[in-house]
Image 1 (spheres, rainbow, N blue to C red):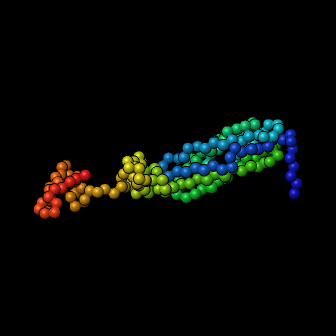
Image 2: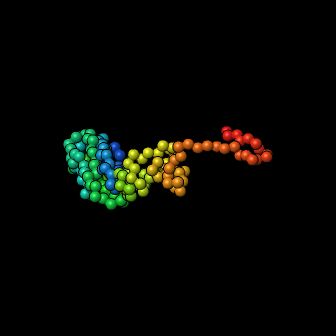
Length: 178
């Protein structure tokens, strides 16, 4: 096994080794992600990018340059909740270390209530609540938080109340509320 390094050839360097996307099943597609392809060798790098997933888009697909930003985008909304793995391969006829591979992971989270927030991040996964309101910051959405309203009175909240002295109590003739 022989390793040949040509000091006059281009050398492919990726700015990251992996990219992760995450989205809810019924929500919007995740934002595009960018990585760089740099030539850390000599000459000018000529490369072509390919992938093995029909849900992934690469722009640009090729370049003749020493530094290029490449954008990856998820383009499919028809994926069931699961973890999807893809590989982006950068190949070059003139680089001394071709090909290079970038791992891409796409987590599609179930969305039981179809509010666009995946169940693992939804503070109320069974009730539609896209705003994710949580006024007391307890991690449970306001629409799912238990209430102290007694269902026996039809959910009505009293408009006023009265406190009466606890007479006749021979040991405590007054009531103090603190």
